[in-house]
Image (cartoon, rainbow, N blue to C red; front, side, top):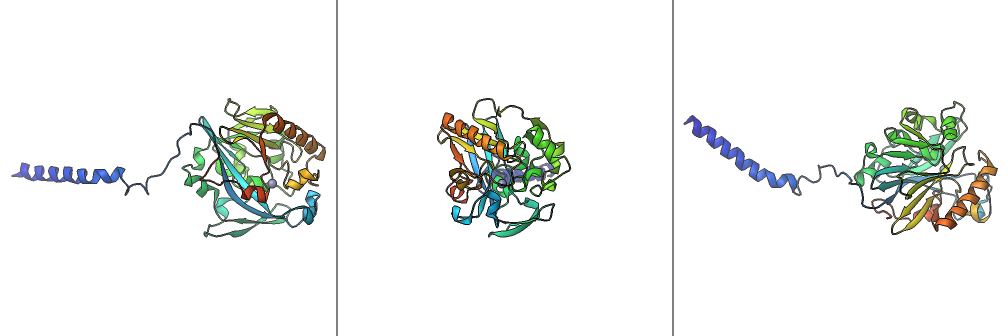
Length: 303
Ligand SMILES: [Zn+2]
């Protein structure tokens, strides 16, 4: 009798498993199962919306309001997903942890160390945009910033577990203790202990196959750089960093007043122009509000 009871329970348990099994792999289990991105077969470039920056003073760019379509600047962050790993390029102005998404635009005031205030609108966290395509910050292998200004370092600390690709002069300025108004050291302090790859080459090939290249373009800051991504269908794209902020800087030949070296910026612009000609790549001016508005945003991607 006792054996029969145990047998009954075993049979019942087996039946329960049989009925439960299809649900584990089925639609019911899917929402709670984390969707983890697999390495793509070819390079993908994702564009994230890291907010909009309002600019009150066009004089800083040696421009007038009449010279531009809008004084607003887009802030784009990028993920380059390569078969051998992935790279985050620039991280916005507003740290994810400093605000709560509401589903519509939230205006955040950023106060810089010298008391200057900037206003940025954000509506999606970078973390949420990464999660939407199956990545968490811990999945990121490399972090590279075009430069150290606050509107590019906002979420840098999130990627302190990645290998940081930076030039020596840039890193020295970031941890040198003397800060101009455009730095927000609290947003990148964790990088001080990151695995760091000091980039010395003019052109640094991140994955060794010529498809993702960090190119030196100093002037805006000591170690400012741009990123070339060679995509199978789209062709070559150069992400500008702040080599230009507004297209009018290019067409009217204007260099901002707050460069580390205006002379170096001019030389970098000439060098990047030659690079664009040689590669046939398009230039995406990261802060160009109109240009950015036309780009496909994640979860869509360029390949
Ligand atoms: Zn910027």
